[in-house]
Structures are given as structure tokens and as C-alpha cells.
Length: 317
Image (cartoon, rainbow, N blue to C red; front, side, top):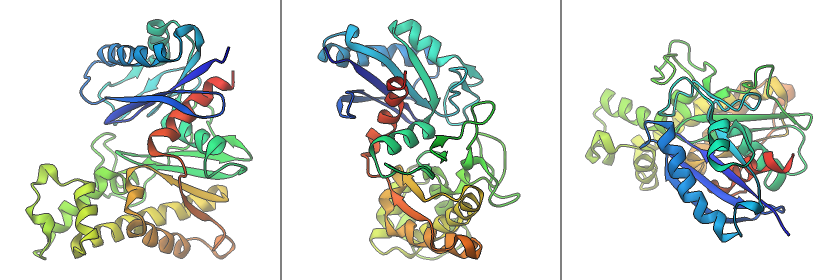
């Protein structure tokens, strides 16, 4: 009888999960809110409630091999989420153990971007690649680095936090970490909204974004304005692409990847963000790296890559 694995992708806003077969088909999937749960216990209760419905559809818990979880600051060695700036639960959360206790099946946890990188390597644009960097552009900026065919975890399980590297010294404050000038504070969906607000406040240039209440001024509103030709919105994407391209240039010179694979909501902006990103990457790498690195958009459905990657943690066992 076939067995299945569950992949869970915990994001700062929402948590996606699905049941996956051994060839990478997501058979059933659903989603719950992360941010509404101030306590991790109520989050796990709702996850159990919703996942139990899907588990019954494939014949019950006896057919589930295990649960793989991708989460911000998820430590593959300890099974803990540790000091995740974009989650409502602070400090060290023994999430793998808590989920295992609730479901009574094996659980493995890793960083959400590492999970997405595994999903991309097994099923997506990075199939056959031994050296690539996965960058997730969502509420935050996550990253998974694969070198010589292996995920880079580092001695403590936290290697590859490229979103928290400083790209503008003494730059914008990151509310979650208290640090200044990180890539995440500019190139995330949150950063795009902040850039739009900054430009609108510094100038009196006309923009349809001025009609959007500040609380509703998000990356989607900026994208929609840019597609209508709004100059301020287009400038926001130019600026975001410039910062991202500069950061990617540093990453290329560090690990010489064959490709950088971009994944997440901001990639929907297409050339609005990709064109300046490519330009500034090439402008900032030294000659031996120029025109060598592909920038690719993930082939996997946004909801699937991290679910597949998280589930792949269990197929490895």
C-alpha cells in the first residue's frame, strides 16, 4: 500500500500544507492563518484539525510516513524554531516535538527557504543542478544555498540567512531584528511597501498610490499601479531591483552558483523587478563572474515548492 508524506510551509502571514505522494504530486492542500495565532498551541490545534480532514482522504494516519515542516529560523538539528522575527511566537519553540506529540507521527523541521530549495532541486528549475541559490521574496527574504549538491546548514543549522546580510550600512530599520540596512528590509513585500511610502513622503510627484490609505499600501497595490504606468510605482521596483541585484552580486562572488532561483509573491512583478535586478547584479560582480549566472523564476507553483521541499525531508528517512 502506498504511503504519503505531509509538507507544511509556515510563513509569517499564512501556513500552507499538503499531502504528497512519492513522485511529488501534491494530492490535497489547504492553508490556515499564521499571524492570527498569538500562541503556538492554538496554531498547532488548528493545523491538526485541518490536516486531519486531508489525512482521512488518503486513508488515515496509518498511511502517513511523517510530516516535514519548513519554517523561518527552523533548525534542522534541534527541531526548534529559534527567534524568528516574522512569526508571532517569540524565543525558542520546540515545534517539531510539539507537532509530533499532537499527531503521533515523525516530524522533521528545517528553515523554510531551505525546504523550498530542496523542493526546487527535486522537482523544479534546479533539477540536475549542484550549485544554486534559492531566494524567497515574500513577507521576508529567505534563502537556501546549495553547493556541491548539498544544502549549506553550517555548524548550528542556520547558515544562509542572506536576507539579513547588511546591504546598506546604517540603512532602514528592520523592526523584527532591530538591525539596520538588511536586504530583507528592502527586497521583501514589506520593504516594497516601505519604499513606496518613503518616496511618496519625500516628493510631491503625482501617483495613484496617493489615493491608497497607508494601511492598505502593500506590494500588490504598488504592482497594480506600476502595471498602469505609474512612475512612482515603477521607481519603487527599480529601487528594489537595484538593492536585490547588488546583494545577489555579493552572493554570486561567495559561492559561484549556476543559477539564482527566485520564488515568492514579488516574482509576480516580472520584468519590473527582474530587469533592474539583472542589470545591478552584472554591474556589481567582477569580470570572471559576469554573464555566467542565470536568474530564474521558480517553476513550481508558489504554494507547492515549500510543501514539496518540506515533504522531501521525510522521504530522505
